[in-house]
Image (tube, rainbow, N blue to C red; front, side, top):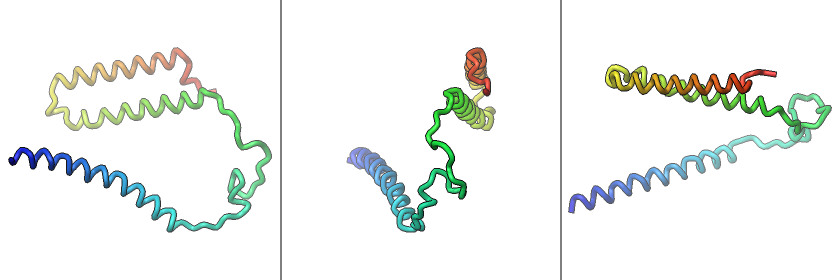
Length: 124
């Protein structure tokens, strides 16, 4: 009988997290909507709220290289975040973790070399 309660308790924990995962963002967005100042003016609806009249179209098309450059930055930035937990727990992980991290860094280096050869990293 005790195993059934443990099984149901697991579902209860998942249900609590699901409810909190829905209620907290909805509550925060609702509170933000109720507490924010709302003073619409003509200037607030312009493209730039700097006081300067826009002199050309606000929708311009950027070169795709800017997006690729930003994506490469995000990829390598996130990948370096994985190095920190490994460095902290290195004493407990041992030589196997060193080999795995070596493979990880070699794959990152190959990705960087590939991006460099494709001239993705070249800023215009």
